[in-house]
Length: 429
Image (cartoon, rainbow, N blue to C red; front, side, top):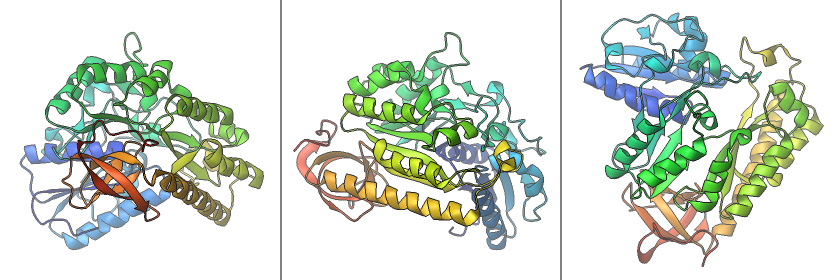
């Protein structure tokens, strides 16, 4: 972490894409309140490692900014508020509810009890777009499920959705402002609409956005739950070229007994069937997944079933987590897998993921890609594969021909043709 600037508002973000969106909103709110010399730490509570990193960042920020006001917020505050409050480096903590409002930065707010994360009334509609790269559009917050390993419902509260008319209008505004890509995000994105009148689905929302914003080049989804992908969403992948061919699935395990003990709502076969169906409808689609290694009671055979899921689902972009017991969760009371076994299994999963990614990168050589350039000399193909984009302005969508890869990202040249909005899908030559 670089030293925070000595003036203005600095935000240090940990965790999910939704935290990134909220961090941008908090920065704007604090600036609107006229604040100076503030460091906001937006914490994550998903794993003990995320908590450790946040506390480490707080201590480092205080060493580097002894006179700064350090405000700590996020799911870590909801779940472990007393722990953060006890840190001498922390000026004050801010609950998740209302943290993106300007008035939150001009009055003293005390921590709430864990799980009191607020409701729809105090959840503002959020987007993050700086005019150069992709725009993140939050359409859902909270979670109604009770996975035995997860503390997110404590930090985020119940599931609530933004009204579809507001989402569509905001998407239209972002498209008219020049956003080359909009990413729909939420804590449990595929539960979108279940709490609203008429229960509009995520698939319907996707269709409405693309119809209302014909000039939007790309629409992408963040992490989704395999069992909640509705029929309209599946058909949208088949029929909507502007819906990017990539899904990051919240799978967690490939073993049915472990999935039951996690209180996940899908079976192994559901995940495999979804990937097979989507690939048949959209051959260029790529899948990522969250996977946990070493969940309590996980045997070597159960782990082998998860390891095989990489090939059975055709996963190419893995997020692997060694199981981390979170206090207060049912899984923390189950017979634990030894820590060394969890780490060793996580390493094997990551190795399998790297092998799958390498095969995927190999298959792109010679193909023509539509690439959205981001900052730092890299970009994303339609299927979310990382592509080196040196000397390409952030926010441009360019057609590129893949020449090779470095094991992590594709190396390509810009095609002499114009825009890549009409670039061929992977598989064309």
